[in-house]
Amino acid sequence: MFKSWLKFFIKIRVVHSVRRFFLFLFSVPVNKNNWEDRFLIINLQALGDLVLFTGVLKNYKITFPNKKIYLAIKKGVGFESFLKPSFVDEIIAVDYKKFSINPIYGFSAISKLRRIGFRKVVNQDFSAAEISGKIIATSLGAEDVIGSDGLELEFKFPFDIQQEKNLKFFGRNILPLYTKIIRSKNIKSAPKENRFPSAISYYAKIFESIAPQSKDYSPTLPIPNNSTDIIRKFNLANQKYAVLNINASVAYKRWPVERFMEIARLLLNRNIAPVLIGTNKEYPSADNFVSKVTGSINLAGQTSLEELVIIIANSEVVLSNDTSTVHFAVALKKPSLCITGGGQFGIQHNYGYSDINLWVYTMTSCYVDNFRCGKRVPPGEPSPCINAVSVDIVKKKIITLLDYINNLEKEKKNCPAEPFRIVF
View 1 (cartoon, rainbow, N blue to C red):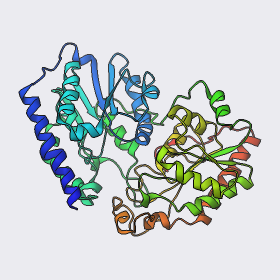
View 2: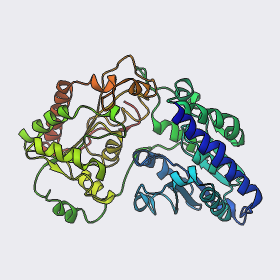
View 3: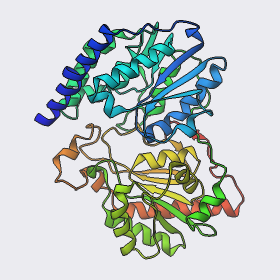
View 4: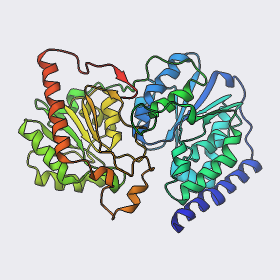
């Protein structure tokens, strides 16, 4: 608790205050020369969230063909080549960590954007807990600053002291600076179950505050041209394979690895090689996996982002307990199965192409608690909602999905056969 409070104190009470002092003392004039011809979109979320966001982002260029569109994203996500020029005209990479702890860097980043000059700034991150992007949005001297008031879930169940204090800071110091506020409570909830609207619905509502409603919010990604060379490079040519991500951002979101091994053996029995992906840090766990499941392949930490996209695009199926990988599968129209918990259930789940994108979950008492159940389990253990997903359920789902794909192939039908849906 003290560590969480200390992070807030340093990032907001100290760094933000010093940064504001620099901005006051060495104020950089806003460039208003033709500033109506360009505008800035800010989304400092993680890689998977950006993939999901492409469904809305693509509509900016369609709707505003005569505007120069800038997009601010986190530095280091490696996504720039996919976004420019397909989705935006310019990318502004923000070093998220340095912005939080180095007031000189923050001052320099904001000053750079003020020199470009934007009449309109749109913060597309619908979470109120992410502060840095909102500080940037409200520090540029824009005439219009548009953003969301945040998720009610976050205010009701803050994850820790830092998030609780960030939310209070947002409400008192940032929200009043918006010229247009998108009220999240006005976004319709998903039907039937105890879940939240899709992230796409939040993104779309912010976009629609300045543009007409689009008929197509399906995420999409361009596939690099050198696909054949990449598949050969990793010895995946002329064989069927499945992409497995056995990792997650935090331990309590990980489905037990022994259960993944059972699914991998099922795939091998159907002559589909399990290909494990991940970061450099996740190489050892993937290496341990392949040592116990003969025939599986470890590519963790060995692919660039472009290579990963090609590998997913040429796979039979994607299996993961991390939604980021599945966002790629949906954007590439590839079959997928995601094992998921319910911390923010619905926001990044149950969307895509209903015939090929499956979401496996077991609703427990900790659903929609903003992942706080993960703090109540021993280190390294899955949360109750993740642990409740049995291997038998996943086996039945993956067999059904593989049989369905085979039937589409035999009948020479398109895959997917169903249209994109924001929510199932």
